[in-house]
Image (tube, rainbow, N blue to C red; front, side, top):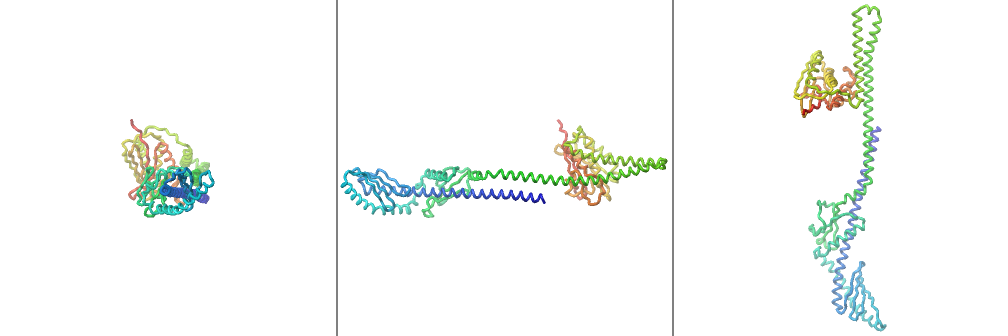
Length: 506
């Protein structure tokens, strides 16, 4: 329950962090696009003002040259507030300044040496201004008409200076604190690119570009579009959540550490249960020979028994056999210390595995025949020279053969097969039997210390779960491996395969 609760809490924490990061990325992306759109709207307005200013300047020039040929225009400009300022020098040298605001106008006169002259000049100017008033309304209407009905008929490249457009874009982005590279393009209503400031390294998706109408006042069928793409947008947005990355990494580290800790706890718990089973089994195994030796020792105290040589010899033999049995059990216990070492002490030398296997099979044949079984050997390996510890390798093979005898079928003759073969510069030794076999889920676990295949309350085969663990450790110390397989072709039994490296010949 603790593992489940802690695991759920960690996964929930990671989920919240990932969700929070996802929300921040989405929000940052929306804010970025909103800022870019706002900047492009300003760019569009500036382009419209430029176009209106150009039309007004052209019409004003035409108006004054037509109605005041004796005057010289010194300076003219249109302010950002929409006012038109004009500085004119008349034929008598007087400089006048005019300022037009929609349908009204004001005049600032230059200095005059005489008050009467000023009054006369003022009356003259007022008369001229009345004439200009009449023309101004028509002038502004003409400009507005030109903007509405003729501006969109011109090609977009004549209406926009693309360098000025680039400067406007850069200026507006900087005003909104977006100082990152961009690529913009002007596209007409048919989707044809009229201008593009840089080439794309990789064509962007439509969703990656921000689009703005250049002149919103144009007819929909005549509108042109400004599209802008930011190649480093993802990096720019990702940098806004870089401070959250360490917290996610640390959370993952804590989760992995927790998982490893829980795994170790379960492993230790399982090992503790196996050791308890081992102690109980060992206690039962030791109790029998100790009881037998104790009983035999009491019988030897009887003087009548000592007078009978045959009975005395029999009791002595029982004590000897049970002592050997005790020694064997103690030897099994001492094997546990082997697993506490990093590596067994091996006396390596060159061995012909075929010859070693032949000798072991010959010795073991008597035990197999005792149970009415047979053992065959098939030496397919042409190269069988290995570097190994002869004693430990012999024990390994004896362990496998002894297991085959222990787990034989009672109602079927035992059949054993020992094989050798070469493959990929390795030696393979297999021990096959037709015994009771085992289920697939036990094939890998049988090499664990103290592990025994559960058989309920039936304990017809004695053991401590150390034999195959010893076999695997010795094989690993030799640089080899061992695995177990189920027999094929419907035959119930087990096949153990040992893999050992061959000595490389020069």
